[in-house]
Length: 172
Image 1 (cartoon, rainbow, N blue to C red):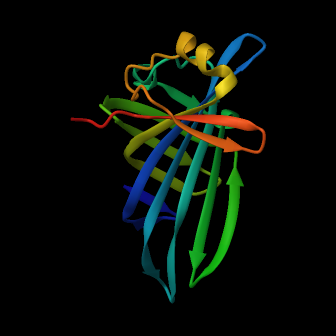
Image 2: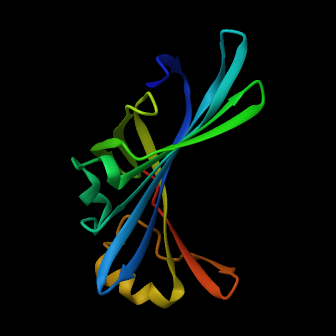
């Protein structure tokens, strides 16, 4: 269920990507969930777009750790990109509240609200991947349970760094 500015929209997809990094001997995970919604006629405008929630946490060391966790306000960045008849607007808010519920394989139920963004979102996101840099590959395996990811990462060169992308195992 998605309501934006009191208007209900049909969700196209919702996917979650994680990025792990270390800072001062502490592991941090950035959780990014992007939700896209189908076009709908609202008044005289065709409206569609995406919502992206980004959250940095230090208490996640496995996908299981996401279950039944809630985060509020300044910790959460909510970016809403809206197309009205093809003209895009982009708004960012820092008043989000997110609650993760049950995880089923590579999916997790969650709800996200933003009063300033006039947003209510309740859906299930597909967990796609976990990123890190190649220099942190050994550290990643020490601080994050990799059982929910395929063993072989996709390696990608970006400028002078090698990024490792571990794909979440499909729910089978």
